[in-house]
Length: 279
Image (cartoon, rainbow, N blue to C red; front, side):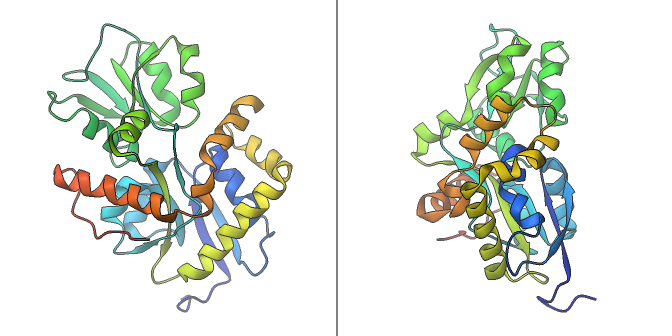
């Protein structure tokens, strides 16, 4: 059994999306001095949200919306995650006559994702929609084929949805920023309370981010390997949008955004009440 905060190899789970592979390239390739070796699992956030419930990973990328169910086992780290402005989820439709989601068939990437929580806050007061969890990469093709009336998408989909003949019913990030003045808190990095020293992990990840920015070409092969056939221009746009000052440090605005999201959701009865994450 691993001694508390003693390690040889740690487990780390994050998505294959370019922002994550860019951020964690140095850490997972032995380029961060003093960091341990990592056993890496690539998985969509809906998978990691569920796996983290049982404490499966030592370090894990999850949705901020999942924190109310995870903070008993994990500590939120102030770096490495995904927050920002102008980078929020989109609600997409093929039929432009659709003006609301009430009673509609809607594909979402996960039921504890920040995207879904934002959509529920945005559509509060409407009749319930018929929700189906669909793997992220399948949502736009399914809406384009008419299997769903609308789809909730994240990440690089905001650069490519027009190719599927789809239209944006709502930009949930724009709605959130207008309503709160805060960035959109999308993905969080958590450290297992019993197996990882959060201060050490924070230092490792901050250094990995610094090295990524210092030499962005170093991670290119690794990023493209996992980018699910994304062309280079989309990969570059994705990284530029989602890897920003909040990746290095949440800071006061980042912490305020997380608190605002979870407090508002708890007030609506959508998540359990959660202690403030604080700066």
